[in-house]
Image (cartoon, rainbow, N blue to C red; front, side, top):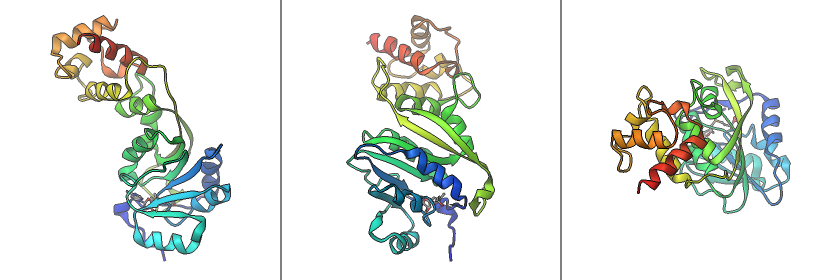
Length: 256
Ligand code: SAM
């Protein structure tokens, strides 16, 4: 008998078609192996092992890990651990998972910034996917949209209602496809992440107000940098695209 544990975000997928669609979207190539985050009772795992590639999975719940070992035997390389800090594969991999909601965002960030990740297909709360795929000036656009865009292209594949899971979550879910990309940017990715993070500290404030205190900028220096990058000094962070943040980072860097 399954005894779902809330603290580990256990809402098990009960929609075989969605499981097949997630796995079909992975499209492993070359020597890619498959990584599953949070296999649970195996709804996705059953499909993943049919891909004919090594499948590694990271599951935190010892009870579920024992069940998975019994069900899948040597078809599954099961790591019992926490996917927020367990080692990720050293070889090229494609990741899939119906992610536990409480740690979904850190896991997305960790996977797409890993140099061996070739693609990730994740089920998340729809609200989080809306943030990931949002474009400048849309309500959901913010730090997470830009963070993901620095590292990957993101596309929503489909949504699922609460009754696709047991137990039923309170909210809708959505599946997002993430393809790591190397964009032609002037700035180092880590520098852009730092700038974007400061820029969205307080949503109601202007960009210049948020940037006072970033590196050696005071409010005046922030306004000058924003103007030098050809933006209105009263602009808000949510109006700027990644390329525009890149231009601003270049100006701030050139101030020394
Ligand atoms: N993949 C299964 C499915 O689709 O039915 C289970 C999905 S359930 C939403 C999330 C799974 O992640 C659970 O099995 C839970 O025990 C596991 N989990 C929760 N936190 C975790 C963590 N930090 N690291 C690894 N697994 C975790």
